[in-house]
Structure formats: structure tokens, C-alpha cells
Image 1 (cartoon, rainbow, N blue to C red):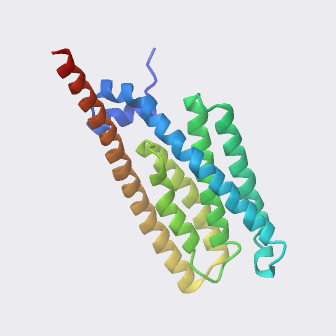
Image 2: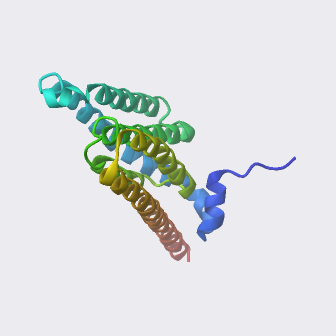
Length: 210
């Protein structure tokens, strides 16, 4: 029977790091992601809850209320999933993926359906910044960006025209590539830092043994 190769194993193979070292560091990397998620989730919930409340009182925000509610419910679901499975790596990965997709879909809808007369600044900013918050394999980051773009491009074609549509198509292509490259580079450097710290710790232990 052919053995299934996970995305993480492919990432290890192509990263150039020592596979045994990375496998030992997997819990530390997961802990770093968990820490980021515990900070990011409450902030996102507070933000979308506040925007939902403000949308009751300000006319120019009222049209965004369904999108705020969608993002708020998505963030709460992600947070609950994280709390229920905080010691389960699979639950944590699903929670992180759900959170990033909710934020990207939120920005996509704000930048297309509800704002057809201006460029999707919110979407571009989130696309550029979100994937670098978590230490994810490149394949996961690529799938997240591709999914968000697959929603954004058809909606832009439906609701935008002229120079605005042209600018958004260029922006989504450029910033998708930049986001992918930046996220992979930063996360590789973070993993390299974990590897160096681990190897330094081992060398100190060997020195003490001597």
C-alpha cells in the first residue's frame, strides 16, 4: 500500500531543514501558532462586535451589517473550535484556516459587492498581512490565497467596471504573489529561528555533559 505523504512532510522535504529536527520542533511551532491565535481571535471578535453595534447607529455602516455579522459568527466559531481542541493539532489548523478564510471573505465582500465604486483596499491589505501571522506550510498559504481570489475575481467582474475593475485585477494579482512570497519567507525564517534555538540548546547540553 502506498503511504500518504502529508503537506507538512512535503514542506519538510523541500525546506532544506533536517527532517528529524523539524519533527521534534513540531510541538513548539504549533504552540507558537496557538499563541498567535489566542491573541488574534479575541481582537477580531471585539472588532466585528463593535462594528455590528455601530452599524445600528450610523447609516453609512448599516449596509455592511450582514457582513459584520458573518465575520463575527465566523470568528466566534473559530474561537470555540480552538478552545475545544486546543491540545489537538488538527483542530488548531482548522481553526486558523477558518479564521483566515473568514477574514479574507469579509474583505472580499466589502471590496466588491458593497463597494463597487472604489478599489478593494481592505481586501488587498488583509491578503497581504494575514498569512504572515501564522507559521503555516506554503501549500496551506497558497490554498487560502487562491480560495479568496476565486471569490474576489468573479464578484469584481460582476459589480465593477472600467478603471476600478482594471486596478483591482492588477492589485489582486500583484498582492497575491507578494503575500505568498512574504508569508513563505517570514515563516521559513521563523522556523529557522526555532531550529537554531533547538540546536543551540542541544550544543549546550552536550557541553554540560562533557
